[in-house]
Length: 151
Image 1 (cartoon, rainbow, N blue to C red):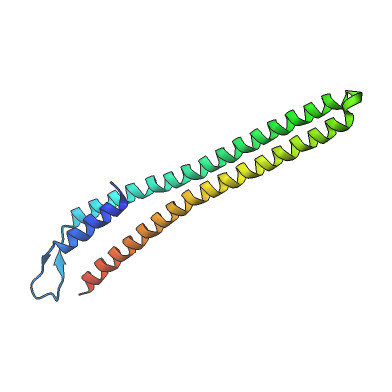
Image 2 (image 1 turned 90 degrees about the vertical axis):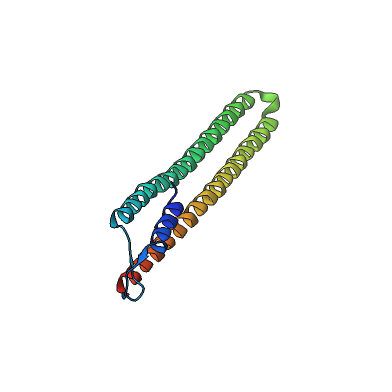
């Protein structure tokens, strides 16, 4: 169950609780039910944190793959450059082509890195917003519980 749903369950539990007569608006709730929902929230939160960590790991994997691909492209370009340099009649043309391949590989590598960073940042932003919203909801619920206990 998602943390948002559990918080709604907790709010419903408080909303539907029986009022205590002559208590100034205090209500009576089953503490076992409250603690059960809190336990479920605690169980669900690590799952969402794990999900955020997986997103970060995916980002690292994407970057590692991009770096590996870029290194392979550069290595292949450098090998091709050496072969072309050994051919006397095409020395100038080989140098220009090899430089173009290396520059292209570096540009592609930069594009891949940038795209991976943008993608990972978007996912992390959504995860951060979700966690922030959930934390705000938990704080509101705790505040509501604290206020209801003060009354």
